[in-house]
Image (tube, rainbow, N blue to C red; front, top):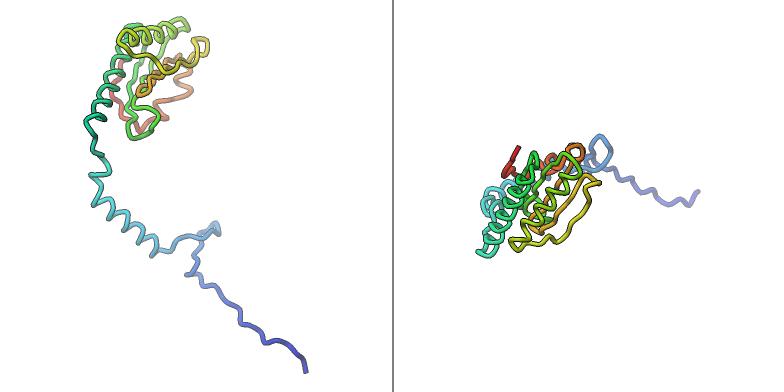
Length: 178
């Protein structure tokens, strides 16, 4: 006679308990997916208007208006220096980095420098100083940071290569000057 311990029956995993997709990773069940979808739809229907358009205080509305005016002024100053293909993008809600991008192109290193200097001098006369200035005309990309507005002055090949308009394609186009 042998002293063998009684065998425990093996547990079988049911396929319903842990469904797997073709990759072999666990996935959600159809019921869990439906429940999640219903919860999202219920949240969207009840709070969609409130979530989509947050209420602004008077100070926030004034700050946005001033930022838009600053961006428009930067566009005007770039146009005065014969910048080409000037674009104004609104980034509110897409990033906390800034509210507006101004993107302008120049035909030569000298023109890139003249556009950037014209914007800096024009806005300085109105009491706005840049928080930072990056790049140089030899880099073919100059960046002027005014906090709520960032101005990019780029040579056309660099502008096409980096594709800021494509990168920020979800941003509404406020203005384009060709």
